[in-house]
Image (cartoon, rainbow, N blue to C red; front, side, top):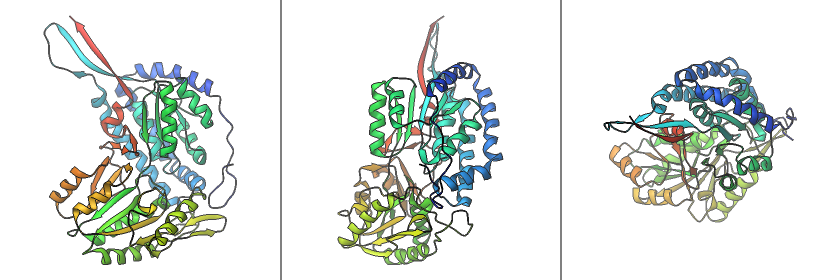
Amino acid sequence: MRVNPYTGESLPTMEPTDVEAQLKTLRARQAGWQRLPITDRVRALKGMLTYFEKHKDEIAQTICDEMGRPREQARGEVGGLLERAHYLAEIAPAVLEPEAVGELEGFDRAILHEPLGIVFIVSAWNYPLLITINGVMASLLAGNVVLLKHATQTLGIGDHFEKAFEGLVAHAVLDHGQAAALMAERCVDHVIFTGSVEAGRTVYQSAAKGLLDCQLELGGKDGAFVAPDSDWAKAAEDLVDGAMYNAGQSCCGVERVYVHESLHDAFVSRCEELVDAYVLGDPAETSTTMGPLAQAANAAIMQVQVNDAVEKGATLRRGGQARKIGKATFYEPTLLTDVDHAMSVMKEENFGPILPVMRVSSDEEAIRWINDSDYGLTSIIYTASVDRAEQFCREARTGTVFMNRCDYLDPALPWTGVKDSGMGSALSKYGLLGVTRRKSKHFRL
């Protein structure tokens, strides 16, 4: 049963859909959609995007009700969706045009980028608009159509996507077994999945049975280094926000920080002030800056990590407990120091508002610890030196390296992970190319 995380009230039920009928309709629509010139697809999709502008407040309220994010922050996610979608629309004509391979007398040769057909997108609840638009917009621009399975928690957002994209997106309410069968039996042509590592492995196995390619965006344990030449106060502001925003429910949230010993105490003191400023409460109130956990059971995972750290010698500076407000479960914004890699809080994803800070003595030590992870989504360095950041970038085994910022997806850059953080790319030209197949045109004239 779906419930509002704050009030505990039941959310509207949604009956399972007739997936066979949805697939049949999508197949028929895709044939005509593919034949449209790319400029016509771009024009049509830009018109469809106005749905999100017109229904911004309604969509924000849906996010607030379904996952407990403060309503004002939910409104910002609509803006992020539009930014990404419009960027992809602008670059699509150039990216998707046939590629010439050099002149050869008597021949016409090119590499064509053709749509795959039906892209099956299994989306996540934590950023229900941003995660979903990455795959939806790229797929549609490339001439595909989309079967969308949104998370059970955020089915209402799935319905908004179906309404916005006028027959090009079908929102399917189905269980995991049905989803696995669609992939294994090749009822769809490509898979884009966002979720946990464990679930990603299961999806990959199902897709393999149908010989389908996959894009997997999985977990993260993103680490940051605050170098001795950095603006440590600005770093504290960014990194606390990167750890606490959306109640820490983000794959690219900041989950560990390594601070040079010369700055450690001042940095931690500023973090304490910032953590103390959070206001937990009703996500519909403008004064609330942190809402409840979308899934209350996750509090137990966080508590295990915090308790393990304290038992092994960590200092609990702030927070460290689940808290009930009304019927909702919150986890207090939590700051830990004196941590090390023997503690699970430095190694395992927690998906919560927890910031562990570890003292380091050199750049080399920081990068060694940052790479000591099964994940590889993003890494961060705060420094005044571009040379230092370049060295950090060369050595960090992550899909993105930030200098002096964190927790942001630039639509011009590929969003990709290494190791357990996944495979394939969203956004940028590579997100568009990732939902096409290459076809070789080889004509003797």
